[in-house]
Length: 99
Image (cartoon, rainbow, N blue to C red; front, side, top):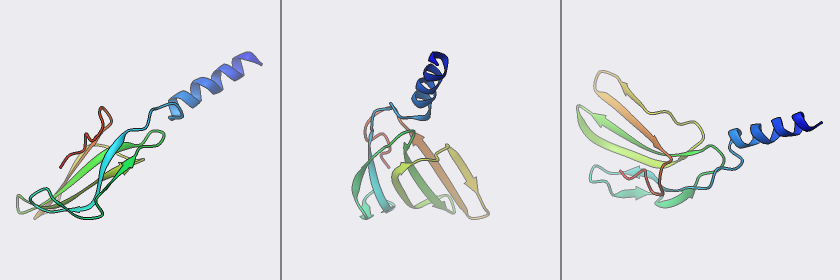
């Protein structure tokens, strides 16, 4: 029936089937200077994915990080006694996840 088809169309839109792909920086390991040391490339978001940049601090000094595309991405800052992890997500522009 028509209401059912319309509901499916709306659901597909919100699940991410119609979001345009976004190009993100991808790097498995970024050094303290912001230079990619392993796995430098680009990735394309799919569906509801976002670009992310993760920075790991040891004793308040940047230690290393990573960049890429992720399906599960929420901005957060995690702390332990000597280590902090800062995760930022973005989907507003290409290459928005610069280190």
